[in-house]
Every structure is written in C-alpha cells, then in structure tokens.
Length: 334
Image 1 (tube, rainbow, N blue to C red):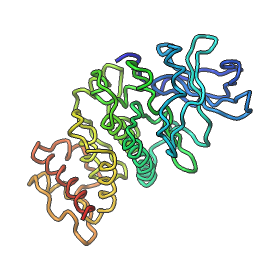
Image 2 (cartoon, rainbow, N blue to C red):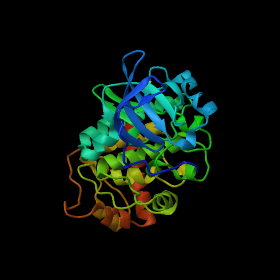
Image 3 (cartoon, rainbow, N blue to C red):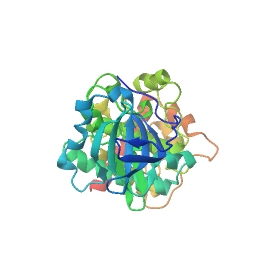
Image 4 (cartoon, rainbow, N blue to C red):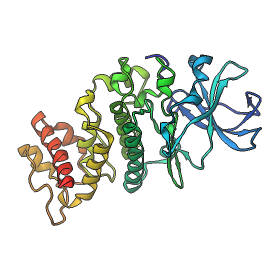
C-alpha cells in the first residue's frame, strides 16, 4: 500500500520560527504519526493555539488536500477534531489544521510507561463508545493509532478521522496499527477500525504493539504471523482470548462491532468472580463455573508466562476460550 510507514518512534524535527502558509507558527512537535508530524502551533489571525499536521510529501496533491476541511458533517457532537484549514506550504509540504484541545497524544503517554488497567479500561471504553456511534453513522476512521488520540481532562479526542478515505489509495497511517485487509488493498471498514483499536488496547496493556521491527517484519506479522505472548501486567487473564478474536486476520471472524468488543471486555472486568481456570482449560478444553457467585482467583501462578498457557492451546481449547467470551456476552444480555 502506498505511503505506509513506521511513524511510531520516528525522530521529530526542530520547529525554529517556522511559519506555515504565512499564518501558523509552529511552537513544538507533538510527535509523529503514520502520515507525518503533528505540531502545536499559533494561528496569527485568531491568536489561538491549533494543531498543525505536516503530511509526508507523498500526499502533496492540492486537489485532495483542499477537500480535507469538507469532510462529513455526520461527526456531530462526537469528540472528533475535524480539519478547519488545509493546503500546501511554501516548501511544497501538505498540511492540515485542527483546533487545539488540552491534552497530549496517547503515544506520548505510552512512551512514559504502561497505564494502569483501570486507566486503560476507562480510556478504551470512551474510544469504543465514540467509534460505535461513528460506525452507526456510516463513518470509519481507517487509520487510528495512539498518535491520533489526544488524552485530556474531559476524555479522549480523535484526530484525522476519515483521512485515509480522503487521500484515496495512499494509507496515511503507521504499519503497527494497520489491519491486514488494508495492506492488501481493501477499503476501510468498521472491522479495520476494530483491529486497530485492538492493537491500541494491546499496547496499553503490554507497552508495545504485537508486531514490531522493520516495515517488512511488521507487515508480515499482520498478514500471517501468530500473535506473540501477551505480557499481561495487571489486566484480566481473559484479555488475551478477547484480543485473539479482535485481531483475527479475517474480518468476519472478529467481533460483530466495537460495541460487542467492549461489552465483552466489560463482562470480563465484571466477572472477576468467575475467572476461568487456565489449568483446567488446558487439560479439558472446556469451561465450567464461568460465572460463579463467590469470588475466585485464576489458577495461574504469578510467575507463569501467559503465553505458555494460552499460546499453547489447541484449536479445541482456543474455541473453548472463545465460548467463554460468548457466554460472558450472553450473560450480560439476560
């Protein structure tokens, strides 16, 4: 796919006193995303702060760039920051401008360390709620990644919604978060957003995305490699099984939508009294006592790597883990 890159962890450039379009003075870099580098800037006309995204030269098509502020009006009251200006600067580099909100990119938060499970759960709930509404309105992001989530006092904001659709054949995102069907020329869908959100959840739990390395290694990971061991930190043990569904290589094998994904996660969070026994699962391939009334701890020693259990499951046992997810969902519906 054209223009796909690593994005994550790339070096930022010095701003100096650089002025974009004789109007936007770059103040400081907020980091890179798959399509370019985002800056905090000052608008000389309004004297207000804004976000300026300097896109890679591969996106320097003036007709396309000028369409960005005309994106769909269906965003409504969602916490989505839409472009309010765009163009190509004096050096031939395309840019987009969105209003500023207080906060910092999730990518910056993750560089400081892994958030607690409580923080991860709360943030993921807000993101999936937002994406569920957007998907119901027929809108897809297409290239969501931590650098496009602004975490602030009032909750998360999302940037660059629909950028991949507007830019056509070029993919303006980081390879770490791209769904395999997009790599093969597919169109952005709610399933591709679900995959990318699940990668973000993985990174919030473990501190890094499941596939890393050079571009080819990452792409092959999405296309054909099994998920690595999930270093779980303080997340519930069932999160591994949940992510194995949301990160399926085949879109139809993922959750039906992001609402189902989060409701399942909510069920897992609420069912700490019914955590399934990994040792029993490995021995029998079945799950019993899923929602016991009394509190129960998982049969997994703190020193046992999670991957040594779940990643070693047979097909039958993995299906049993998936049945757990189904039962959790059914239990909440009754």
